[in-house]
Amino acid sequence: MKRQRNPQDDLTFLYQREYGEPAELALRLSGTLLGSILLYIYTGWLAALLWSGLYLAVHAALYGFLRLRKRVARPRDPVIAGLLVVAGLCAFLWMPVHLAAQEDAALSYAGLGLMATTMVFLSRRADRDLWMIALQIIVIGGLWAKVSWHVAARAHAWPEKGGIALMTFVVFFYTAQAMLLSRKTRLAGEETAARAAQEQKASAIGRLAGGVAHDFNNVLTVIKGNLELADLLEDPKDRAAALDEARAAAERAEAVVQQLLVYARRAPVRRERLDAPRSLDRILRQAAPLLPAGVLLMPQGQPDPHCVQVDEGLLTAALINLIRNAADASVPGDVIRVSTRAVQLDDPRRMADCSLLPPGAYASIRVEDTGHGIPAERIGRVLDPFYTTRPVGKGIGLGLSMVLGFAREAGGGLALDSDARGTRATLYLPLAEAAGPQVPQTKNAAPERTAL
View 1: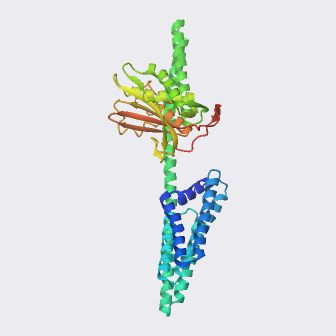
View 2: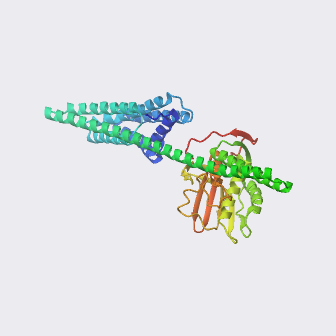
View 3: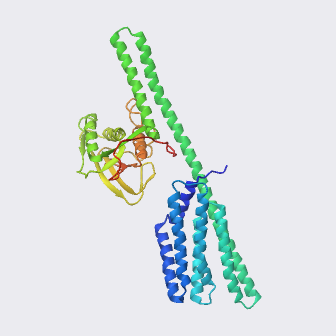
């Protein structure tokens, strides 16, 4: 079955094809501008300046359209963008074609070179839509035929003309074949990646369902057993104790549900503007009594004030989860250091779930322990729901999953780094803008369309 694409994905793809490689884009645009200036100096043609101006104008139109529409795309927008791409190809190639037909050797060589590099670029580009590739092939074929016609007009014998015609066909055929093969390879790769993602999602849902069923079965067993025991006991104190055990088990089930909602990004969220260092101090005071004896919890550094806009309760739960995990890996005498600072990411940064955190301004909240670290064979699984190394009854394995869900909902990420010196968990949360509403906002987060 053919996989359906949405217009937003198509526009994002085109944006990446055109503007995803800044170095190549800068070379392409600046090279065209510089080339037109040199061509004007060499020939005195005003058309040389018109060439770069027209090409840059079409690119500006395409860039503006993609930036405007790629977030909220209409069904016809990919067609408009595709036509602008083909228009940009025509705006660039008409001058190389004109140069290639000149008798001046330098001009002819420059024109043929620009046409050859354009064909290489189109073959590597691998557009998705067949109609776009067909139009590109028609443009390339028509312009190359025009060059061949001018070259053949200077030939003196039919064998020369025949050789030129044959070479034109060969160039056209192999260029078209390369472009179509690149498209086929890209689509096959996308289909393979989509199937792998679906299989991963199905596997994750299976593990999640199994974990939920196992944990709730344990909780229900405790509740049912204590309720039956309460019916049999005559001593009021014993009956009250059994009911307290059943109530505690029900509260554990409620906690599991809440953590699942946070992980799935369906929990009601009340965002408010928080000063990160002050919130961290308050959370550390709450977390200190939870630590084992002999393990020291220490704030690190004196950060400048910086604000985040998150749910305060979820931030508290996330950091206490990280601190408790650090405490579990520590022994008396170890130190857990917690710090926060404002950072500016200039490049995408890989997170623990293999996602890439976009460049931007973030609050980096780090929890660092001096424990034994996470073994290499386990670090890839610690984010899996219900994965835990704690004894039965001591944890359900949703702590880091909940932290990850909170970070995703806030627009940030979670990074993990572990070795023999300890583990460092870093929570990245986008910095709140200097100006903006400070009134708490309530939002029901939509589920993320990624594998768990």
